[in-house]
Image (cartoon, rainbow, N blue to C red):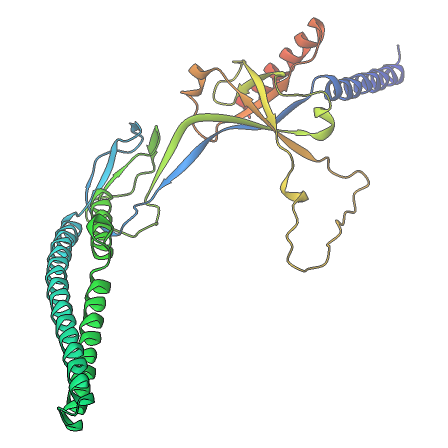
Length: 352
């Protein structure tokens, strides 16, 4: 065989090999979809104090596992202890004020009774004088004086009733529903709550990571000072939309992590996201911006799958661990090639 014939034969074999490889990739993309755009994620809780203050103690270390309710750090309690004491004093003052108002009400009620009796006496005296006047026994001046005294006593009675009403209004409701008592108790409860906030505790189980907090730091209400990585792991994988035609929650997949090359773990599709950010538009009054592309074949849209893994493996995965996900096809032969495919890619990721 001449060199030209050998070259021609090599070119033909290369073309055939390329066509076979190209056909395999098309077939595998349809029947055995795989993606390297996958990773393990964990929910991150940003720990922020609910009050401002100075840190007086940090009870955890970096990368420490903590349980729900476990103490993370302490704030200086002295200002809040003083506020609690002031709230207790205010409650005692409210009780004393109520007692004084109760006494004032009794005095005003007694004054109303006295003024009522006086008014009634003046009325009877005026009627008696009027009878005498009709018999020409008293002068007009006596009648006028009696009527003036009736009006004066009536004014005094109305003033006493107004004072009683004022005292009753200031006193408010009796018992525990009294406004002063409720306000004082509300301030007391708030002071107790703020004092409890000086001990910042974990809201959920997780791992404290990237800890930078130290005693002496000043922290502000609502400002995150610590990150808590939760134990629950969510494996996400982004697939081209055509690869998800037959995928439903419960479908089986294989997962290989870059940190454990060659090791395959079985996973189950938990859910498929309902959309992606490119389909989200803000009602901001602006005009539409059509997508511009100079490519003949546009990039395929990707959608996100969420997968459940073996809980024993989850405990060993850090947040952000990169992975390769292979959706399992139907049929023993296809499953064999799918397993071979993800194992090869996993080993290639170990090399590169």
